[in-house]
Amino acid sequence: MKNFKGKIAFITGGASGAGLGQAKVFSKAGMRVAIADVREEALAAAVKEIVAYSGCAESDVLSIRFDLTDREAYKAASDLVEKTFGGPPHLLIQTAGVNSFGPIEASTFDDFDWVVGVCFNAVVNGLLIFVPRMIKSYANKEEFHVATTSSMGAFMAGSTTGPYSAAKAAVNNLMYSYAEALKPYGAGATVLCPGNINSNIGDAEKFRPAHLKNTGYHVSEGTMKTLRAIHAMGIDPVELGEILKEGIENGRVIVLPDHDPDGRAAMIRSQNEVIEAYTFTAEKREAYMEEKMKAFMPPVNEDSGPPPSMWGVPEGGEAFGQARRDLDYVDDDKKAK
Image (cartoon, rainbow, N blue to C red):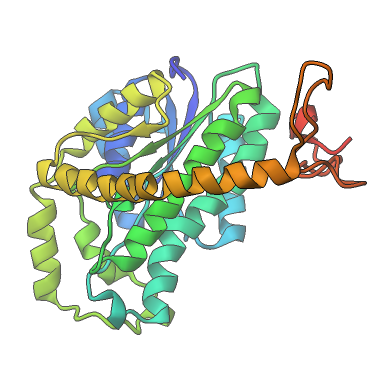
């Protein structure tokens, strides 16, 4: 996606931090921007900041207060975007996130339900609600794109951020899948994986829902002050927004801002461990597969023609992995025949 002027963006977590930075960047690029958050006062302040930064009209910024884990509220928000701006977003950016720190073995169900609920389940909500509308409106006619703000933590172990790191790893894989799936519609997907961001995610515990308050982690005003001090040293949200914009313009599936040397080194170590483990087992697997191939596939010579399928297709299995025929937004080549 290269042309943003006059198009529509929807950004979650848009009232502060990375989401607000993205809203400023894409508003300045000429987009009409809808921002979603759970904090009414923060949304009002964010609208003023976006207008001041980009010089857009206040009517070009729509703020919507709702809980991203509430699917009915999410559907209502998507309806409001279409009613206000005349269509679904051309650019969906899901940036809202929460985190809490503590030993993973001390985690409670509430810790997982809260963090995974916002960081992963809410992303699923946005994709399942918006993508069908985006395909119907724009497929192979106008540029459209989906993006999610993940984390460098998705690539490595997080013994004190277990729910968060697991959710972000799932987000990465989800976006890789959408990047491949959206190609037939002329669209793309990007996952942004920053390290530390100058944001207020350190205050997230203040907004934890009452029914999910049973945490296994020690939380106090002091621990939140510590997090605020750490995040104050992170990358500027507008700079991060510009990095994401460049990644979208160039069709990057993964955007890894190189602004956190310690995080980068830890990520490389983690990925090297995976590569070394794969290399170690590759030779054994190659020998195993060679034996299996002998059993499944007879020797091939010039007179025997092409080899048969290794597995074959069971009767009635021709539509394996296809979508239902009645889904009117799915590419015909992906539907059961």
